[in-house]
Length: 472
Ligand code: SAH
Ligand code: SF4
Ligand code: F3S
Figure (cartoon, rainbow, N blue to C red):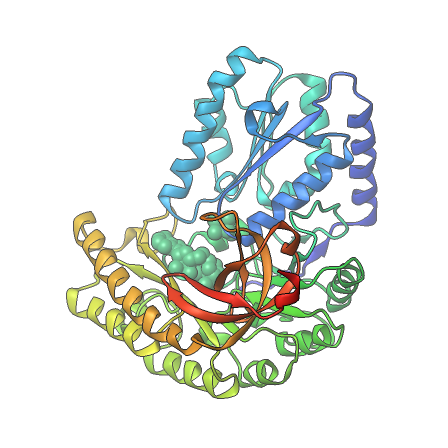
């Protein structure tokens, strides 16, 4: 593997982009409102908060829908084919809107655009797009938008500078009580099916001090839960001076006093005993772990380039459960990987039964251009993969209901996110174990942590009654 020293965006470049924010602000014909449409993972959701932060600094307000906005930005994902198709379908839909509103600015950015040649291809095909930039150019939005507004011609920028770390960007957070903090960028794992290392660049960690300062400021501002983000948080710190490990970082963050700390995603191969111990000892780290297994079969795991086998994975699950009894466990699974036989798929089913996950994200393998798996022989026919997905969902559902019985009658502290979608007299949020909990409540509970006694396990959500009766 080549060594890439991370390069923090220089103070000069930051100042330059700030100057462009000012310049856009002063343009008489600049857009006055924006809407950001986000696809993909939490990383992208957080990137969208940074895009929104920059657009706000440029004097724009957030529109209530894309139809109302003067500028619509699509922050795309390309991890599976359907993510790309969905984004492009929605971009096409805006073309009609632009016919009635020619001044509308349409931008596309994110992982899909970072693929080689993609920006040019999209601009050729979708002539109404005004702005396209890659994940490595996110911090340059002010300048790119300024150039677009001044030239009234499409502006495209996709750099290969994939080892950049952009500190100090303005962030417009979606929630006042909960915040994402990116701790590392990129991925070096090259799982054979995955496009992320190609569109997010090499693995690089932010300085621990910068992360701690950000967390302290968030806590001082009233944030109750932070979610640390990275494609592979367990290898945090690689290449940094001072040798901070992820477990070490967690301990430092734990000392701040923020009530809840979560993180994702962890790669099983890098899940260390040191981290398992830190999980058991840190007071504010939630008893929850997302540990993507992808397959329960050793041959498939090898072909996926995952660097662990079924036994090693199960051993880590057992050690986690020992250190943190009752821990919430979730996973990602791919079915229909090239060459996967029925027998190998059965190994995935048996692993799901054995572990008893609290929830699982399940996917049909989608060949991604440039990845090794896309070129492998014995691609599994779509109907076979679909059938496996359905069978997997059934097994997972049963295992999940069984696993969640451990919460019956127990108390969960729930950070309320919103009114329940089903009832105006109920609210829902996440319990400490990372599972959704719904209980009677009202809008004034949003953003509060409420103790709840669990009375019912339904699929993907627990229901309960509140234990702070006086507030009802
Ligand atoms: N870095 C994280 C996840 C990144 S993508 C990790 O390593 O776990 C999220 C999930 O999408 C993956 O865990 C995997 O299950 C799924 N995924 C990635 N590439 C895929 C592909 N080509 N087809 C189907 N699912 C895929
Ligand atoms: Fe993709 Fe594997 Fe990296 Fe996760 S660890 S982002 S699945 S290459
Ligand atoms: Fe998608 Fe990019 Fe995340 S490809 S899953 S948005 S890192």
